[in-house]
Length: 344
Image (cartoon, rainbow, N blue to C red):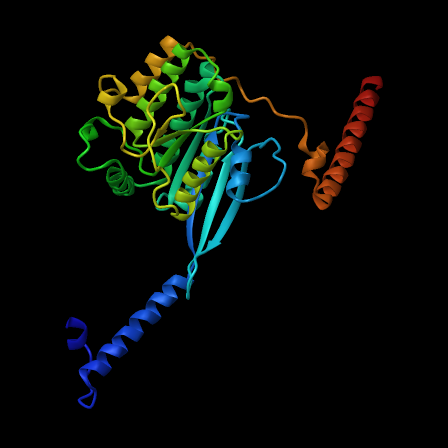
């Protein structure tokens, strides 16, 4: 009625005519909105060599042979919904190759896209329990610094309210949690190797990952590229983050440390884990006491990618070769001058 009152009504029009006009206007507006693309962003980071590139290729339906990610790589996927006036959805995917000396690189995806449609997939190597917390702590500290530097306090609080919705407003542990302001899914990779480790070690790993996922308001899944059901579940979770479909990739939940863990958002609790309410610092300290951690080594640069056939770029390579020749000429000229000055 408020819309009718705000219009200049032609007395020759019937109520039915006016209603039809309003419906046509509404459909026209919805069609315009549907035709404009929507974007979401997934930031994939974590342990080196755990299979991040392979997982991203499967998510984007690419057959590329994975190669080592040197620093920060960007790719994207596009999907068009079915139906008239279908909406085009774009998913930006960023991958961090190494956690060593990566503080500035971690900021890039958040600075480029903001937090509103941002999510992160943290992939950890289950086959190396003595590096697991070192890698996870590096990721969390890097993300926290990037958030503090690139988002206002009000924006962070608004986003945390959405995390509360995912976890559940009535969750009994809500007051003890350190919720992140965007969706996080922790993926335990190389489950096929991990499942053969000692049962006691697996128990410590599961308790640690369940505890940290719970306190962050994150989901947790175990993954292996050699296990089709786990691979499908992990791909579904990426589709959920990137395109919103399926709306709920977690059809079941698994909490048993003797099986691949599947813990949806808000499904866990301190009581179910079997520990007292804790925070990320105490969780890390407890795990490191049980399984001593290897410190993260300073980043070691790989071989020159310009000499790697997989990174060939003719135009850039030609310019690089020219600059190398110029540099060698300058060095030789300088060397000759220095020898001449010594003789003088």
